[in-house]
Amino acid sequence: MMDRFLPVAAEKRRLDRIFWFSLRKRVANHADDRIGCTSKMMAIEGEELARACVKAAAEMQAENIRVWDMRGVSNLTDFMIVCSGTSMPHLRAIIRDVAGIVDKGHHVKPVHSEGKADSRWVVLDYIDVMMHVMDEEMREFYGLETLWADAKELPWDGTGQANGGQRTSRFTH
Image 1 (cartoon, rainbow, N blue to C red):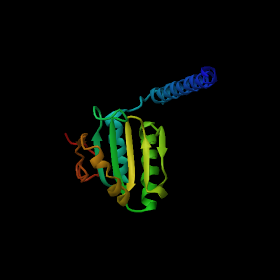
Image 2 (image 1 turned 90 degrees about the horizontal axis):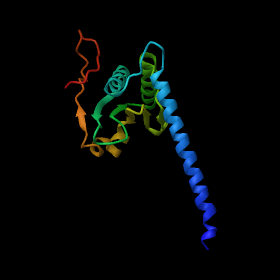
Image 3 (image 1 turned 45 degrees about the horizontal axis):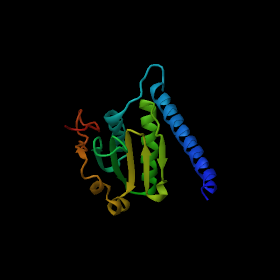
Image 4 (image 1 turned 180 degrees about the horizontal axis):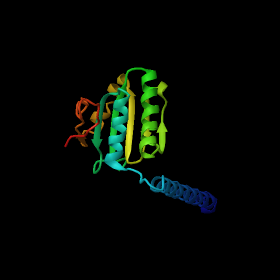
């Protein structure tokens, strides 16, 4: 009777090895991309990357931008950003320009993005930073702010009136 399950167990072990090998390969490739993005510039990580994402979102007039330090609360990411757009074209513009501005200025692309503007919720995953761009109605419905209530919110100067009236994205401590 046990002989019947041996091929299944062997197949499961084989699939597990394939999965872990491909995962290690993806992580190694991702690390190589981030370490050697250009010969003169190092990739940014953590809080600096979160600042770059917030600044890009603010430049696109994203609304209600909030940033949480997830270190010690979640193994998923170090920083989580949630912002809102007012319409489908606005959501598309925020998503497109955040990814473009961060890539152009810091040579970092999202490792993965999930969702489309038509779904009214898109996640840009930079590993160290996860950015949620949501329609206000979806944001209220899912309540990510309450889900991660244990995380420390980083105050952000959303007025943008520092530096002689120029729009800025500063975390205040």
